[in-house]
Length: 252
Image 1 (cartoon, rainbow, N blue to C red):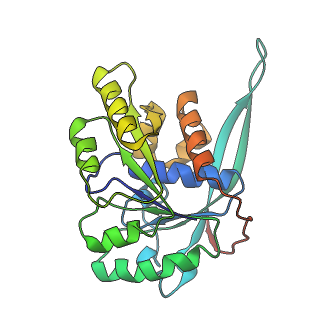
Image 2: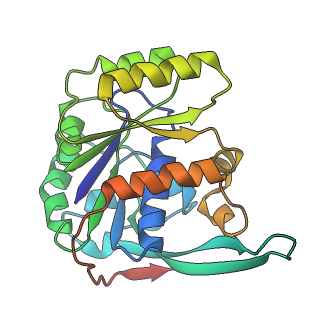
């Protein structure tokens, strides 16, 4: 399954964090999920200065696919008993990128992404704010398209006015605060437009992740409501495809 993650022409909505956490949780659950930084910027949450090859070189070499060892922190315990902390490590598969892609590079990537779908159960495309037809062509490869917006009216109005929305869409309202009236109005408007909606609450842990990277999940847990939202997202994305074994170069 190819999953394109976009916000249309609008940036700064937390799309790369949504892409990263979706890939992170799918791999945690044992699925073979590949996160492709197609200029969206998720690489910065994993590596400061990645070595080549990069996403733009995928059409000529699969060495651009790397595995990155990550950990997740889980607490377990019962009422009035001391909590135990359990840590699980697993591989996150991704292709790094350090700059925007040229139209020619995007066109070449459009040709190779369907081939990656033969090796991975999920190929998640982290796209930038779309600035031209070449990126729309990449976004439209998605069997499923995550449309990420925030509750600001200027943001979701711009997305809703985008003519090229279509296909199997999962809308995601990010950075939602149920105490703010305008956010509730945004939720109602988006539900009316899409008919269904995944709501990700504002979460300080996700803010820290955007500043310090995915490694913070080894010792900080997102809030329960956040994990519930992403569990719903993973459920919506889930398919009955068989798990696929992958061999990639590792990076600790």
